[in-house]
Image (cartoon, rainbow over all chains, first blue to last red; front, side, top):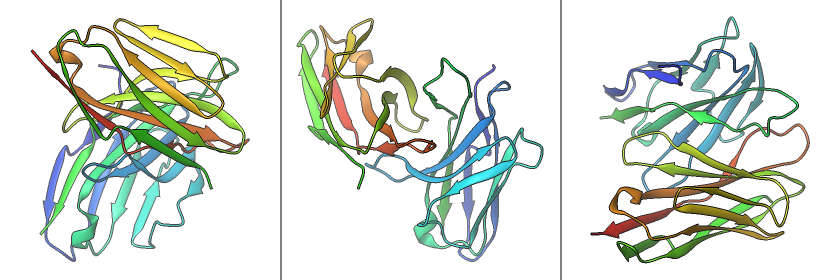
Length: 116
Length: 111
Protein backbone atom coordinates (compact mmCIF):
# COMPACT_ATOMS: atom_id res chain seq x y z
CA UNK A 1 0.00 0.00 0.00
CA UNK A 2 1.54 3.32 -1.06
CA UNK A 3 -0.94 5.66 0.60
CA UNK A 4 -0.54 7.80 3.71
CA UNK A 5 -0.28 5.74 6.88
CA UNK A 6 -0.87 6.81 10.47
CA UNK A 7 -0.13 5.12 13.76
CA UNK A 8 -1.66 4.35 16.10
CA UNK A 9 -5.19 4.20 14.72
CA UNK A 10 -6.69 4.64 18.18
CA UNK A 11 -5.29 6.08 21.39
CA UNK A 12 -6.99 6.30 24.77
CA UNK A 13 -5.19 8.30 27.41
CA UNK A 14 -5.81 9.95 30.74
CA UNK A 15 -5.97 13.70 31.14
CA UNK A 16 -2.52 15.16 31.71
CA UNK A 17 -0.60 12.46 29.84
CA UNK A 18 1.50 13.11 26.74
CA UNK A 19 0.74 11.38 23.45
CA UNK A 20 2.62 11.13 20.16
CA UNK A 21 1.25 10.22 16.74
CA UNK A 22 3.18 9.23 13.64
CA UNK A 23 2.44 9.91 9.97
CA UNK A 24 4.20 8.36 6.96
CA UNK A 25 3.32 10.30 3.78
CA UNK A 26 3.25 9.08 0.20
CA UNK A 27 6.91 8.61 -0.66
CA UNK A 28 7.26 11.18 -3.45
CA UNK A 29 5.28 13.88 -1.61
CA UNK A 30 7.33 16.68 -0.06
CA UNK A 31 4.46 18.47 1.67
CA UNK A 32 2.81 17.16 4.83
CA UNK A 33 -0.15 18.52 6.79
CA UNK A 34 -1.77 17.82 10.13
CA UNK A 35 -5.48 18.44 10.72
CA UNK A 36 -7.87 17.84 13.59
CA UNK A 37 -11.49 16.83 13.06
CA UNK A 38 -14.34 16.63 15.53
CA UNK A 39 -17.69 14.97 14.91
CA UNK A 40 -19.85 16.75 12.38
CA UNK A 41 -17.16 19.23 11.37
CA UNK A 42 -14.70 19.53 8.54
CA UNK A 43 -10.99 19.12 9.23
CA UNK A 44 -9.28 22.02 11.02
CA UNK A 45 -5.77 22.92 9.88
CA UNK A 46 -3.01 22.53 12.49
CA UNK A 47 0.34 22.76 10.72
CA UNK A 48 2.17 22.24 7.44
CA UNK A 49 5.66 21.10 6.44
CA UNK A 50 7.53 21.47 3.18
CA UNK A 51 10.30 18.89 3.39
CA UNK A 52 11.64 19.25 6.95
CA UNK A 53 10.66 22.91 7.38
CA UNK A 54 7.51 23.77 9.33
CA UNK A 55 6.11 26.65 7.26
CA UNK A 56 2.66 27.26 8.73
CA UNK A 57 1.14 26.76 12.14
CA UNK A 58 -2.44 27.55 13.07
CA UNK A 59 -2.78 30.35 15.58
CA UNK A 60 -5.38 28.14 17.25
CA UNK A 61 -2.67 25.61 18.07
CA UNK A 62 -1.67 25.88 21.71
CA UNK A 63 1.92 25.48 22.85
CA UNK A 64 1.01 22.01 24.13
CA UNK A 65 1.09 20.85 20.50
CA UNK A 66 4.34 20.30 18.63
CA UNK A 67 5.12 18.66 15.32
CA UNK A 68 8.34 17.56 13.69
CA UNK A 69 9.46 16.17 10.37
CA UNK A 70 13.14 15.58 11.07
CA UNK A 71 14.33 14.15 7.76
CA UNK A 72 11.59 15.38 5.48
CA UNK A 73 9.93 11.98 5.46
CA UNK A 74 7.71 10.85 8.35
CA UNK A 75 6.26 13.30 10.85
CA UNK A 76 5.24 13.17 14.50
CA UNK A 77 2.62 15.20 16.33
CA UNK A 78 2.95 15.41 20.10
CA UNK A 79 0.34 16.68 22.51
CA UNK A 80 1.57 17.42 26.02
CA UNK A 81 -0.62 17.50 29.12
CA UNK A 82 -3.68 16.29 27.23
CA UNK A 83 -7.08 17.76 28.02
CA UNK A 84 -10.53 16.31 27.36
CA UNK A 85 -11.03 18.94 24.67
CA UNK A 86 -8.18 17.37 22.71
CA UNK A 87 -10.35 14.33 21.99
CA UNK A 88 -10.72 14.24 18.19
CA UNK A 89 -9.58 12.52 15.02
CA UNK A 90 -6.09 13.65 14.03
CA UNK A 91 -5.56 13.49 10.29
CA UNK A 92 -2.36 13.61 8.29
CA UNK A 93 -2.25 14.46 4.59
CA UNK A 94 0.49 14.80 2.00
CA UNK A 95 0.83 16.44 -1.39
CA UNK A 96 3.48 16.89 -4.03
CA UNK A 97 4.97 20.03 -5.43
CA UNK A 98 5.02 20.34 -9.20
CA UNK A 99 4.02 22.43 -12.21
CA UNK A 100 0.96 20.30 -12.92
CA UNK A 101 -0.18 19.98 -9.34
CA UNK A 102 -2.91 21.97 -7.64
CA UNK A 103 -1.65 20.62 -4.37
CA UNK A 104 -4.27 17.90 -4.04
CA UNK A 105 -3.91 16.54 -0.53
CA UNK A 106 -4.22 12.81 0.14
CA UNK A 107 -5.22 11.75 3.62
CA UNK A 108 -4.34 8.91 5.92
CA UNK A 109 -6.89 6.95 7.95
CA UNK A 110 -6.46 9.16 11.00
CA UNK A 111 -5.68 8.58 14.69
CA UNK A 112 -8.70 8.69 16.99
CA UNK A 113 -7.69 10.22 20.34
CA UNK A 114 -9.88 9.82 23.42
CA UNK A 115 -8.85 11.69 26.57
CA UNK A 116 -10.53 10.40 29.73
CA UNK B 1 -12.06 36.03 5.96
CA UNK B 2 -11.98 32.86 3.85
CA UNK B 3 -15.08 30.79 4.42
CA UNK B 4 -16.79 27.67 3.07
CA UNK B 5 -20.46 26.80 3.66
CA UNK B 6 -22.04 23.53 2.57
CA UNK B 7 -25.73 22.77 2.21
CA UNK B 8 -27.77 20.88 3.05
CA UNK B 9 -26.26 19.46 6.25
CA UNK B 10 -27.89 16.11 5.48
CA UNK B 11 -29.70 14.66 2.49
CA UNK B 12 -31.69 11.46 2.31
CA UNK B 13 -32.46 10.09 -1.15
CA UNK B 14 -33.96 6.96 -2.56
CA UNK B 15 -31.70 4.82 -4.71
CA UNK B 16 -31.77 6.26 -8.22
CA UNK B 17 -33.01 9.71 -7.11
CA UNK B 18 -30.61 12.33 -8.51
CA UNK B 19 -29.75 15.51 -6.57
CA UNK B 20 -27.07 18.15 -5.96
CA UNK B 21 -24.93 19.26 -3.02
CA UNK B 22 -23.87 22.89 -2.69
CA UNK B 23 -20.60 24.47 -1.59
CA UNK B 24 -20.53 28.28 -1.30
CA UNK B 25 -17.20 29.97 -0.73
CA UNK B 26 -15.56 33.30 -0.15
CA UNK B 27 -11.82 33.36 -0.64
CA UNK B 28 -9.25 35.88 -1.74
CA UNK B 29 -7.73 34.49 -4.91
CA UNK B 30 -9.03 30.95 -5.39
CA UNK B 31 -6.19 28.51 -5.92
CA UNK B 32 -8.37 25.43 -6.13
CA UNK B 33 -11.65 23.99 -4.86
CA UNK B 34 -11.55 20.38 -3.75
CA UNK B 35 -14.25 17.77 -3.18
CA UNK B 36 -13.65 14.83 -0.85
CA UNK B 37 -15.71 11.87 0.29
CA UNK B 38 -15.43 10.67 3.89
CA UNK B 39 -16.76 7.41 5.26
CA UNK B 40 -17.32 7.07 9.04
CA UNK B 41 -14.10 6.63 10.99
CA UNK B 42 -11.88 7.13 7.94
CA UNK B 43 -9.85 9.93 6.41
CA UNK B 44 -11.22 12.01 3.53
CA UNK B 45 -10.84 10.49 0.06
CA UNK B 46 -9.94 12.88 -2.74
CA UNK B 47 -12.52 13.18 -5.54
CA UNK B 48 -12.03 16.33 -7.65
CA UNK B 49 -10.08 19.56 -8.06
CA UNK B 50 -11.73 22.55 -9.77
CA UNK B 51 -9.73 25.65 -10.51
CA UNK B 52 -11.64 28.07 -12.73
CA UNK B 53 -15.26 29.11 -13.16
CA UNK B 54 -17.02 26.98 -15.75
CA UNK B 55 -14.85 23.96 -15.12
CA UNK B 56 -16.52 20.55 -14.75
CA UNK B 57 -15.17 17.16 -13.64
CA UNK B 58 -16.90 13.76 -13.69
CA UNK B 59 -16.29 10.43 -12.00
CA UNK B 60 -18.82 7.62 -12.26
CA UNK B 61 -22.12 8.98 -10.88
CA UNK B 62 -20.57 12.24 -9.62
CA UNK B 63 -20.12 15.51 -11.48
CA UNK B 64 -18.60 18.64 -9.95
CA UNK B 65 -19.08 22.15 -11.32
CA UNK B 66 -17.67 25.54 -10.35
CA UNK B 67 -18.82 29.16 -10.55
CA UNK B 68 -17.20 32.27 -9.07
CA UNK B 69 -19.15 31.87 -5.83
CA UNK B 70 -20.08 28.23 -5.47
CA UNK B 71 -19.60 24.65 -6.53
CA UNK B 72 -22.11 21.88 -7.00
CA UNK B 73 -21.63 18.16 -6.67
CA UNK B 74 -24.28 16.48 -8.77
CA UNK B 75 -25.04 12.85 -8.08
CA UNK B 76 -26.90 10.93 -10.77
CA UNK B 77 -28.87 7.76 -10.03
CA UNK B 78 -27.09 7.20 -6.70
CA UNK B 79 -26.58 3.79 -5.12
CA UNK B 80 -26.45 2.91 -1.40
CA UNK B 81 -22.65 2.70 -1.61
CA UNK B 82 -22.59 6.42 -2.40
CA UNK B 83 -23.70 7.09 1.17
CA UNK B 84 -20.99 9.14 2.88
CA UNK B 85 -20.18 12.66 4.01
CA UNK B 86 -19.06 14.88 1.13
CA UNK B 87 -16.62 17.63 2.08
CA UNK B 88 -15.68 20.74 0.13
CA UNK B 89 -12.47 22.70 0.71
CA UNK B 90 -10.79 25.72 -0.86
CA UNK B 91 -7.23 26.93 -1.10
CA UNK B 92 -6.72 30.65 -1.42
CA UNK B 93 -3.87 33.07 -1.74
CA UNK B 94 -0.41 32.71 -3.21
CA UNK B 95 1.90 30.59 -1.09
CA UNK B 96 -0.97 29.46 1.13
CA UNK B 97 -1.24 25.68 1.15
CA UNK B 98 -3.69 25.06 3.95
CA UNK B 99 -7.25 24.17 3.02
CA UNK B 100 -10.36 25.85 4.43
CA UNK B 101 -13.11 23.28 4.87
CA UNK B 102 -16.86 23.20 4.99
CA UNK B 103 -18.66 21.07 7.57
CA UNK B 104 -19.82 18.60 4.94
CA UNK B 105 -23.09 17.16 3.65
CA UNK B 106 -24.07 13.77 5.00
CA UNK B 107 -25.64 11.84 2.12
CA UNK B 108 -27.78 8.77 2.82
CA UNK B 109 -29.03 6.67 -0.08
CA UNK B 110 -31.83 4.29 0.84
CA UNK B 111 -32.26 1.10 -1.20
